[in-house]
Image 1 (cartoon, rainbow, N blue to C red):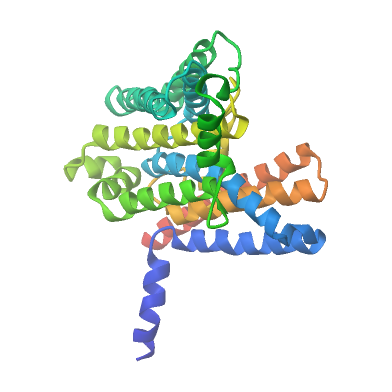
Image 2 (cartoon, rainbow, N blue to C red):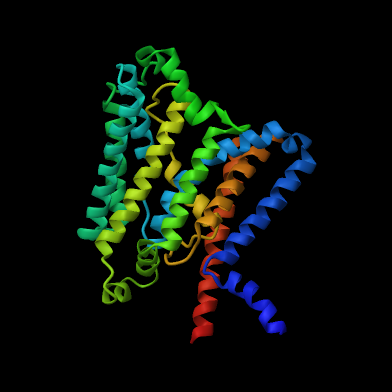
Length: 336
């Protein structure tokens, strides 16, 4: 009887990556409470709202990068695609293009980069680091050139104040039921891709090629198709974050998305997504993005220098990867 009562809990933690995700959530609570005891304004409703809005960008790009980390790949072009999305959409709107049409054109451009990454890595079998390094510079170059190597004017100058305000409120400044729309957009993206990864055949194939690509091939999994889909997810997530940054600034900034590919890796790795492939849950990515933003928010509120913030977060990322390596070695020894 006792074994039966424990079965549900055992099954819960037997899910690959669930233990790491729960550890990340526990760490989030500890970090938040520690900063709150040091600076009570951390607990204020205003700060919580701002924290949720800020973490949304890390969550969305973390989802895209997590898909690739689970396959055993990486996307270094993600941050540049974010910038390209922001610059294309902003440039078009400053020339009077309807915001919806501008967003669709930006989405198409981002998906083309995702498709190219899939072809280079999945078909041509280039190392993902080299392939996406090339598209990283390409996407950033497009972002520079689209408006003549300068930041755009305010989007309201082209589409009018009313349409500009509507765009900015939808993606950044507006609220629904008291919650910033940015966070609601991130939650919708999370739910969609959580379902696709955990409940569909494509999701199973993503885990399969990350666990053992040769065994996946023998099982009939198309490595090229699955890898390309993962890169398309990453490109889509970068597109959404590009719109958020465009809405936040009210214009296109050529440096938008700079270093976001690394923030995306950190969000996934802190949440238990293995950079070695085959393990991890998007639930962990959610926790990892929250941990990242809570650290950044808390260190800012206690007046820590920017350099110290980067050191703390860098140490945590390295520790998370080291922990994953140790756990995997222990698992292999038990299997042997």
